[in-house]
Amino acid sequence: MASCIVNGGGGRIVVRLTADNLLVAGARFEVKAADEAVLETWTMKTGDDGADEHTLATSASRLQNCFMQWRINTCSMHHNVDAGTVAVTVGQDGVNRPVVPPTVYELTDVPQCSAGNATQIDDSLDWVVA
Image 1: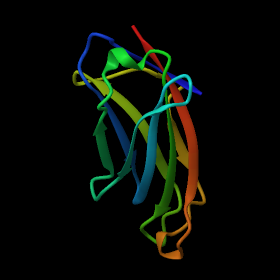
Image 2: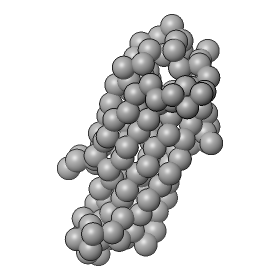
Image 3: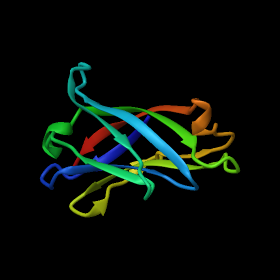
């Protein structure tokens, strides 16, 4: 599990999902408290620009002892492409926040979207409020 350090007194947290090299990614995200209570949930899908972002409704100061988990499904839009990178990054106040280890996934053998299959990525990160 990764960790992400955010500023408790800073602005809203922005989660960004990206996919490159003609890959498309759709995902479901949840922010949960330590007791597994769901604080918020949303879906994202990379578009023609290969990116989507979501601003958390949960304030940064409320994220201490919470975590975010996701399931990403990725497929290729082009028959000659079966590899690329999908990433989940976090921003706050216009600056990328550190995620350790980085939640960047180098994928190979990604199925074609037209085949109705996808590569699935399940992962999560702990929030650390500084």
